Amino acid sequence: NKDFGIEKVLKNLGIKKENKGTSTGGKWFATGKVIESYSPVDGNLIAKVTSSSKKDYEKVISEAEIAFKEFRLMPAPKRGEIVRQFGEKLRKHKDDLGKLVSYEMGKSLQEGLGEVQEMIDICDFAVGLSRQLHGFTMHSERPGHRMYEQYHPLGIVGIISAFNFPVAVWSWNTALAWICGDVCIWKPSEKAPLCGIACQNIIAEVLKDNHLPQGISGLVIGDAEIGDLMAKDTRVPLISATGSTRMGKIVAQNVAARLGKSLLELGGNNAIIVTPDADIKMTVIGAVFGAVGTAGQRCTSTRRLIIHESMYEKVKDALVTAYGQLKIGNPLDESNHVGPLIDKDAVKMYENALKKVETEGGKLLVKGGVLKGKGYESGCYVKPAIVEAENHFEMVQHETFAPILYLLKYSGDVENAIEIQNGVVQGLSSAIMTNNLREAEKFLSHAGSDCGIANVNIGTSGAEIGGAFGGEKETGGGRESGSDAWKVYMRRQTNTINYTTNLPLAQGIKFDL
Ligand code: NAD
Image (cartoon, rainbow, N blue to C red; front, side, top):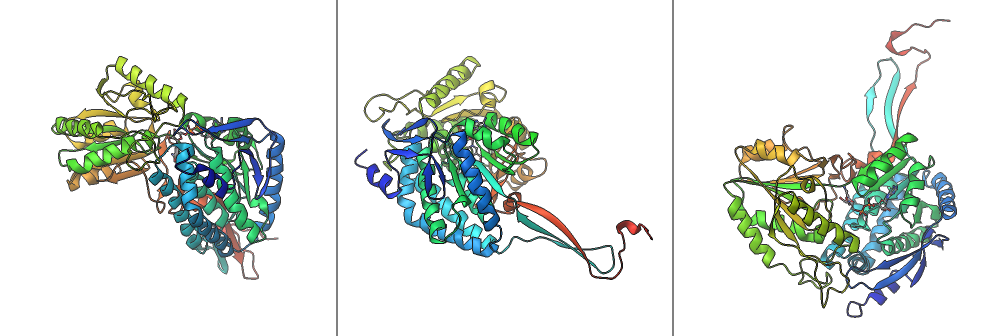
């Protein structure tokens, strides 16, 4: 893709035509099989990566173990300074990295740049946090005793990430883990390996400039096999895994079998409730962006609209009209609204879901379809679809990672809509469109949405880094990014100090010698 200058972008980010996929800091090596990265934008081969073998992985682990011994001794605010420098480097590389994300993953350029902005934001957040890793102090029941708790670094944090946020998810984890004194090993999605190489090159510069051990940041590129090694490895106390619920169930069991910690960020099935008091214009913008943005490949994408019967026809007509205006094409062209799916397998899944939901009784209001011809050579472009359906349909219960929006009707009170909204196995993001205070508060109450994210008068899609991000039920229960999510990257210790000459026991127990 000459117009867009991919060659220059790759050069600026230190990516060659053939790359090694294992790294500790700036050292690169690899002896596994070769992964080819094709762009879903135009179907072109971008570059090749030799993946990490078990032997390569072992090297990364030993470097990480060495690095941790040094890094944990560095004061947290000094570690914050390293993350500050990392954020500065990201600012410098924002344009190139944003373009690479867009070209390798297929999201719009605006979203690619937005993803890098999220990385910068989490760095800023982490820098401040590096002076605020607070523990509590509590009163001891014993005279002359002091009691408090503190947080210590955990060790090696293993990060397994999904293709759809190929750079931001890594930084949400690493920026916090690093200020906490941990070292990280990242296994990016095998569908976006070049994004992994680019990020590793950026952090390697920072580590080198500061004469820090390279094992603070490790990279292992590969598929589920390498992820499996990490999940089962007792030397990795925390696994943070982002991806499908299918993957999460396997990883969770492997980590639990060794009593390790896991932070799981899995699939969603996000809904917007549209009540009789909703602002239609805001609803349509929120729903359409939520359903077709990133071609429906966000964990927070809007999959279901639960519309009050009194508003149903109006909302339906407005949506069908809006879908008629959508421009589908090269995501690097800012006039397009919808880019490609990640690969042809994803296209097949999209087609199967539409077929299946029709056999279940779904009515296609906006027919989908795969686009062919000029500009669609990669075979990954599909038309966003709208289906009239019922919540209990198997396909409605399932997260299809594509732009398919299901319209569901409710009658009566908002409680009925909340029941439908909660009536799925996933629990990531949810929203209500209403100007009615009672409805909004009910939705946010303990009898309201059961999701990790519940919004009023904004859509389900996207989030700010300042809040803890994650979801309940089959979304995995993990929280990362803002608020107190940092605590999962540390181990907690309670300390009691006796400053008397006696040794009183707790609970008044007497033990005289
Ligand atoms: P995926 O589950 O296919 O892969 C995710 C990662 O897990 C990849 O790196 C993959 O190699 C690895 N993996 C797969 N099987 C594994 C195993 N058995 N052991 C260890 N690692 C394994 O997901 P995907 O298609 O890349 O991403 C889409 C999914 O991710 C969607 O379900 C989406 O909702 C979810 N997602 C969730 C969040 C969130 O924060 N909740 C964010 C982004 C994406």
